[in-house]
Length: 329
Length: 287
Image (cartoon, rainbow over all chains, first blue to last red; front, top):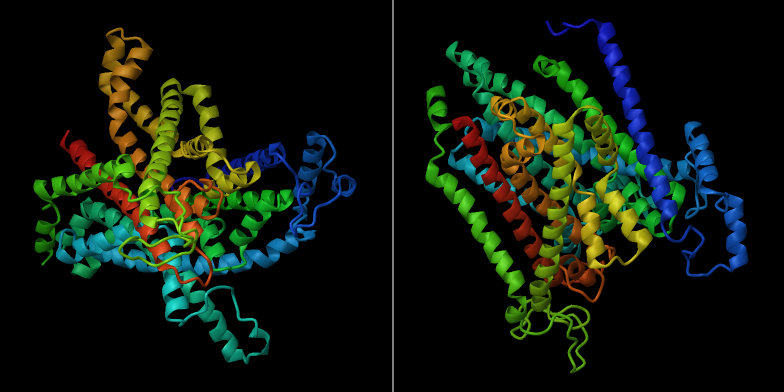
């Protein structure tokens, strides 16, 4: 029933969508490339460590990196490199962009996927619970709390948690991934060290995320409750849990869509939270790169960000079609 | 037992619904009056550095109910004046975004064809660039933007969703009978668009503007916190948060009070958007 179209048609559609996605990412990266170079200043117009460069030295460095060439030439060279999988050279860190990303990306993805999974699980559970008892005291209370939490800016919630648990109570470390003494700890202590550093940023992101998903799940569950097949399930005398399961299944589609939209925040959405907790991931690196006018690193960050955005939407769409035949119609 | 669940579901009484709408509306009026009346409410000018030489952050006291910042400035006054900047920047940028996005979306949806395709592909590309990253790049590269620049920037990065949703609305409306009737009666395309389509966009635009305002307030606060948004010595809620924040410094009043101001505005917007959505959906069901 689900496969009303031939697999060939579906494959064709996926290929078309992928091509379109590539075009979007290419255009977004090109826009960024131009935006950076149209802005005043370049990587060598001011030095990070406070030591000014002489004009001659800056010009020599520009020539070395090809920044003295016409913009079109620079663009062609950059595009040629990117197509071959070379994201360029980070002028801030004096090493290939790929190396910088290889270090920063897993840290961000680790923190973010943990937070996203927690938010999804907790938010869907809470929202589904509320959705099957709309209008009760428990539902109203939970709705009010999640509306308030949803309205908290993540970085501000982080600041509060940081000041309470790290500075006043001193239960948890104030930032970073590990202690300076991490190398000298035993295996068990290392795990504990990592976990203790993870708690505050994870909690900050998960609380707001849970509120977001629970609000959404509640609304879609409420809609699903009115659908004919749920009424049928109830009329057949199925147990309340089975009925809830039927409603939840059709309430799933919009939540998956939202998860797809939230996917790119894995990369850039938590810039401020990473900054706050000195978490040396993509967000932290990008902020530093932006103020150092590190062309290639910033462009690579935007490239990754837009690729994730497009990919998230695409994946959510495909998953929705798979789970809910009505979407394909 | 399932019958009790069923009977509970639709019982959202009219009075509850009005209450849910009235509360945030009262809050909107309250916030707006605070911003307007800041000069009369603030105990001292927001940028006044005490002449007695107490240039240090002090915790809340009777003379400074919200404490002082590291330069000895009164935080209460700065939060009150900050309302003007934070809410003003938010409101103006959202007006820009909704206006621009509305026009683009209406054109795309109404004209259709190649115009629609081109405009929507452009929106696709712009949507793919993470907004916060783009804001960071522009504010850092161009450096210390004036307030008008910040408003423009937030407005010009906030219209994509408006354009997409307005386009969808316009396209759906154009298929309805009353539009066909207006056309058949000889109304010009401009008249059909202005008199028959645009009035129906009101719910979408109102909800999007409210949500956009919440977003803009948070973005302004975040950028100013990083020192990339509103420039010193001007007070906005984000700059007060940024001025006061030193890792390890125990100055909770510099985090709490401006933050509560941000949260109460954002909460107001979100509650208002919820109430509006519920009300408009109800009307649609009724019609």
